[in-house]
Every structure is written in C-alpha cells, then in structure tokens.
Image (cartoon, rainbow, N blue to C red; front, side, top):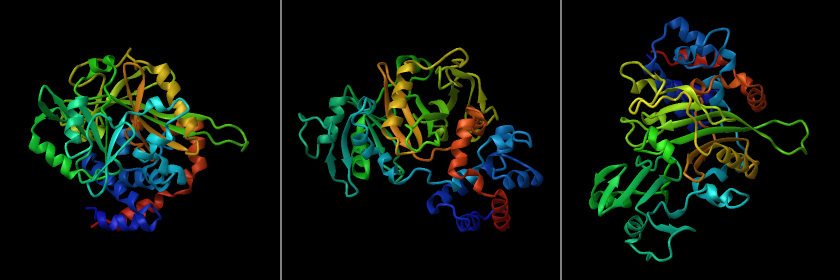
Length: 389
C-alpha cells in the first residue's frame, strides 16, 4: 500500500515544484485506483517515468514508450513559462489581449469579486445598472445568463458557475434554484470573475446542447537557432470536450465529459472519443460517438475552423513572450471566445486522444529544449518504493 504523504515528501526532495507535487501524487493515487497492474509492470512503468496505468491507457511497450511524455518528467518541468506567465491570470489576460486582432476573442468582463467580497467593476460593466448591493441580480436579469469563475484555483470549491434568470426562474448550472441559493453564492464568492456567458455554435449544440463544447489546444513555441528570427508556433494537442448526462453541466473530462481529438490543420474529428475510466462502470472508455446523443464522430468537424485557427495563431504571436499555452476555446456562431489559457495543462488522456506527443519532431524538439530528458525515472521508482507499507 502506498503512503502518499511519504511519496509527496520524497518527490519534493527530488526537486518537483512544491504545489505541483501535490497534484502529481493525487494523479498517481487516481491511477492506482483505476488500473490494475502487476508488480513487474509497475516497476517497468515507474522506471521510465510513467504512472503504471499508462501501460493500458497508452498501450505502452518497449517499442513505443519513448514517443509519450512521461508523467514524472512532465511534472518536473513545471514551470515551463517564464515570468510572463502572470499574463495568464484570467483578469490580466483580458487586458493583455485587448489589441492586435485578439480583443474579439475575449468575453465581456463585468465584475471582479475581491478577497474581501467587495466588487470591482470591470470594463464591460453596463453603465445603466446601478452599482449597489443589487447589481449582480439586476445584471443577471439584464443579460439572462452569466458565467462566474475563479480567477485562480477553485475558490473554496464553488468552481465554475453558470447562472441563468429566464421568465423569473433562477438556474444554477442548468438546475432550478432559488433566491436564497443565489444570495449564498454571492456571499461565498472570493477571487471570482463574472463575465459574459458564451454560447456555442449551433452545430455543436446538435452533438450536446446542455453545456458548451470547449476546445483544448496546446501550442508550443518552436525553438530557433537564429535569435533574431520571428517566432513560429506548432500545435502539440487539439481536442474538443463535450458534456454528458453525468458531467453536471461541465465539459471537462475530470467531471465526466467526453473528449474527441481533431486535426489542427483541417478541424476534422478523429474517429473516437474517450472518457476517464472512473466514469465508465462498464469499462467502455473509448467511444466512437457521443454516449448520450449517439452522434458519430467520423466524418464530422468543427464549425468556423479556418477563422478559429487564424485567431489562435494571432493570440500566440501577441503573447509570444510565453512558450507553452493550453488554450480553452468555445466556438460561437460568428467566431470564437477564449475561456482561459493554462500554463501547464494535463498531458495524460490528451496523448490518447491525439497520439503520442513526442512522435512529432517539432514538439519533441520543444520538450528536449525545455529539459525533458534531464530527469531519471529510476529516481521516481525509488521514491515510490520508499513510500510502500
């Protein structure tokens, strides 16, 4: 049995970022709950830097494991962006992307809720709504639907909230609620941004209409020999996430959503999607269509993709002081909106959806340049063995 507190201490001794190491150990614990492997398989995976369950998840073997990014090495690389990573704070990002063909990619920002609960009114707060204790409910009535999200972290466990007010009825994440719950949410919010709620393209609603499809696109800045040459960018990962009947209004995989990879050049879906194994009681975590609507992925693609791809490249060039961007995007009827940019997005199930990242020569060069091969999986294995009881 693994003593995860001991493992956490040992991993930190190896030099992993203090906060990031906690997430690393939690992901390993989830892996051990979801996948059954032999002691021999476990050693083989750990010595190569992988969580043991990756043997089944990726189909790892001696011939292909070098094409996949090992979990230990990937977490040891944190942080991969320099001091400009502060630009990726959700509030700051709105100001950073306010020019150069990027302003239209951001939703309207209405309010920032400070750590003491006070309101700071942002650039898109309507001037015709009185700024007092009733501002939020009046804003909700005016807009019909709002997005409320933590500026960082989970802000006390509330997470993302979709609030609606239609025909006098309040809803929280598509479920009917009441004014008392609204007041509780308002009172509990700290370090929160209240923004325009972005509605997905009508074609995406046909696949799943109870929550918005979000794209995860990971872009890397290509290393260059000529320090004076302009920067170029390559796509490492691209997949779409749809909500399901068990995801509670969310599209992210960690809540029970389903992901399907797509070709970055064409926007065409790949032939299968996946869900986290823990949400699949029958063990069927690979799906060739949406599990609730039965829409088949093969032959379909993303709407507005040429425009969206151009906007993605504009964003990369605009904030090219950064090296590694995990963009979360909603495609709308007339373009796209950016939800946020992650500085170190998950790379586990993404490599099932999109294939082994290091098989792409450009992406492999990026990670090599960042120091991916400087870390030894044997150290991970030894730390793990010290944690066994």
